[in-house]
Amino acid sequence: MTLGIEVAGLRLRYRDVTALDDLSFTLPGGRIYGLLGRNGSGKTSLLSVLAGFRKASGGTVLVDGQPVFENPGITRQVCLIRETGDIGDRDERVGEALHTASRLRPGWDGDYADALVDRFEVPRHKKLGELSLGQRSTLGMIFGLAARTPLTLFDESHLGMDAPSRAAFHDELLADFMARPRTIVVSTHLIDELSPLFEEVVIIDAGRLVLQEETEALRARGADVTGPAEAVDRFVAGRTVLRERQLGRTKSAMVYGGLDERHRRQARDAGLDLGPVALQDLFVHLTQPSGGPR
Amino acid sequence: MSDRAEDRTWSIARLLLVTHLPFLLLCWAVFAAAVLVVTIGIDLRVTISQSVWDPAASIVRWFALGYGLYFVNRMLPVYVAHGRTRHEFLRSMAVFLLVAAAMVAALLTFGLALESVLYRLMDWPHRIPAERLFDSAGQYPLVFLSYWAMLVIWATIGLLLAAGFYRSEGWELPVILLALAMVMVTGYGIGFNGLPFLGAVVDVADLPLAGSLALCLAGLLPGAAATWALVRDIPIRSRVV
Image (tube, rainbow over the protein chains, first blue to last red):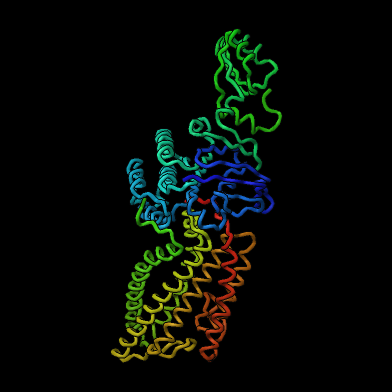
């Protein structure tokens, strides 16, 4: 089962601060979405509203066509794993927290949770407050996967996890998604590391939607041009350059703006190689204040 | 999928009762042992002239207050994170508090009765503080009702204070004032109104039972209503475990 999300005119204010400002988008169910934004852009606020952790100040948030806030029929089907961990009390032991989840989550897969706890070597006897940041994050990811909710939201949930653990979890996330398709939204700053998972990307900045696009289409908005420095300089002249690197006489420049077939032929004729653009560089370009790179 | 999973509204109340009632029973056993030790200690120094259990039982209200604080501060975010609504939490909390307070009140009543037997065997006078609704340990319904009301009221005060402070937004002072009003009004009704450094806030008069109950409700209901109003849309903030 998968759940779609419809957000229209969403506003969220904390006293004098506007965290989300007239945000609107629709996410069809059954896909893995990347939610990207700079610090303070409103990612956590958005996910908190989607999970019913916070009440919107205005606008509508519908999951499966129904309001989320204080709607038990929907909140049961949504799981938000935040970076700081709300999965249990700090004085609870890991085993007790797993037991609590098994009693409260209708779709909880206890065998799967146990297998992941063993595989990632999370100590069951330790209190949550005694776990390292990486262990807490790992446990949070386990809760997110084992809850088996049709809508699962991860908010910077991998903080403190080492690279091998993150890689293993990303593989597990993808494998579990393939076996049991659902809607997953992942908020992260590790854009290039996680981008292979994303089918679609939502970028927000200052509480507003910057873009929502399929990952491949987004990547096609730019190109990495590599070749002799003079030829690269001639080719990118007049274009928006996101990043440049030079080693000896070979230069690489990342340009923003789609290249049609004529431009691609020109590049090939000039002895230049064209590669896909890194999502992170596009993200930096799209969210930087005006006056960025040429 | 787990066959133990329960997708019903009262799963929180069941979980709390199953988890906490054995713990409360254990606490009572420790409490009873401590009161016995204190009683023996007093007897070694002076002549015992009144119940030790009853004043000690009145201290349990601070434990109830702590329970209320704990549930909103620490457990509400966990239950919301596991897909439960605030409404479900509050309803389940009400059921849990009424049942748990009844169990603890019954244990306290039982303890007072045991103490009265001990005092009779030792030929000690078993006097009860004058401000209580009951005069002797043998008035079981009144003893139970007093302790039960005390626990429910103080746990509600804990919930209220925690809700105000968790929510913040300037609610801290209003909930403190409302909590003090609850202590005074309900204390006048059930005779448990002492505060640290202040002693008894009011002098308890000889009210009829109906008047006492009315005062308890007059203090409890606004506090419960304020708690509900504060929690029903309380934001669940990020926190560090």
